[in-house]
Length: 330
Image 1 (cartoon, helix red, strand yellow):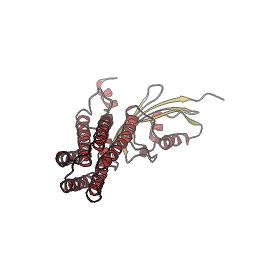
Image 2 (tube, one colour; image 1 turned 180 degrees about the vertical axis):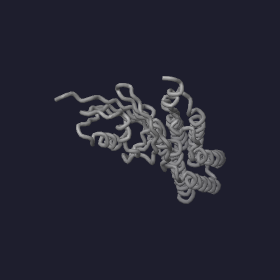
Image 3 (tube, rainbow, N blue to C red; image 1 turned 135 degrees about the vertical axis):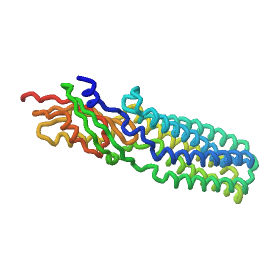
């Protein structure tokens, strides 16, 4: 095979990861807003003695750090998408950023619980009017962030490059268009943008808890509600952290996708007479893109690219390895 022929058969493995995603700009704006409000709430919580307000500020601090990691992941993945050291492109950098941010959130949740318990044991005087005003301002900022990330859970279409291998080492290359995620309910989309969207919703809820606690303490003398809401806020952060850890670890550990996506692939291939899928693995390699390994046994085997063409586009499989065997006589 000469150099020109080799070039024609070769292909990259960027899978659209070199394209700037909408979530990158959205995340940067939310980072700036959250960082400013974080400083205001932490300072106000210390000055006015509100644990709920301080907890909300620390909550924002944790998410500012997590979003900062996510933003770095966007840039790193985009700039290194063509690096040959990444076998399937840099799509998993997205999940790694989310996983790291989730670990930070868990640590912040522990700190919030510690501080809240300390305030339950040793209450401090709270300047309620000022603390309530700052908490309301935080809620407004969170609302703006929710608006900015309003499309955070939408799918992004892209271009995929599929690659098939037969057992006899014949090759087939073709381009396909991915139109959306599979309908199995197991989305491995843009983890950074999705987590940012969820975290600002959690921030908004924590701000509401802070306002509720401060009002209860001011008008009904329920001062214990302030540190109690700090504990409730920590629980919310921890729950969000566990959920994100679960989702991102599935991507990082090449967890098998949901059954509906697998069945869509299996049924598309086995609809031909006496054709069976004996081994099927589909895993996420980036936001809403997947790789697959398929072993097929058929009475009359087709070329590998023919089986590749049967795979539904909505599965978003952009890299496919297909091993084909002839079925022996019965």
